Image 1 (cartoon, rainbow, N blue to C red):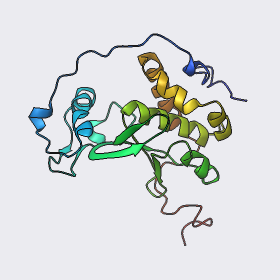
Image 2: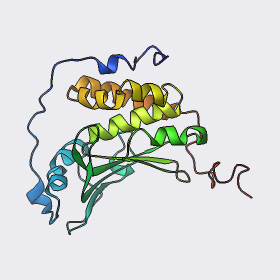
Image 3: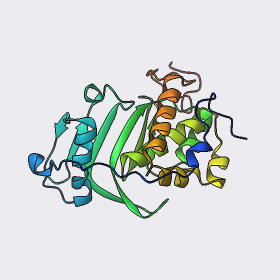
Image 4: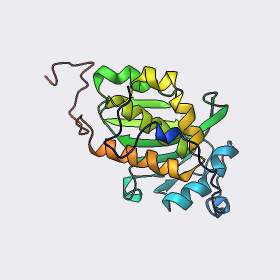
Length: 215
């Protein structure tokens, strides 16, 4: 059974259908940054990121480079770091696309749920010492879905088996065509990070490796 999210967000409501939203035109800033990248899909995403998050912290225009927004540039967001990389990683689920945008949040994945959390998406990874959960996707909306669902599983609000049997990952990504659903998922992510059961601070060890802690 999926519990109601503290009476604020019902995870089942996130999958309801609403009208498609058309984003306003995004100013093209590619010529301003002059990226000499191999992967044009990654390079073309820069304008949207600058529109949403402002001037990046660093820009590497060379082939294989990256554009990075650090925490000081993301003060009004839930993210600790955003990276756009000159890469195009094939990813066939929930639809065929390529991954090139990374989003990082500060979250302690419970050791007992590490496998379940990691099973939400092939683009998820976790640094247990930094307490840093990272999603790589083809858009920030895909990263938002992966992080929000993974942390719900980490917090025990939704089971992996329920999420998979009901296709929540794919449904939520499809629903992100509607900005209202994006806002709901973002609010869910913000709340769960703020009220996470674990300790997001670096403790110097990972319980799966050192159950007794530091020596």
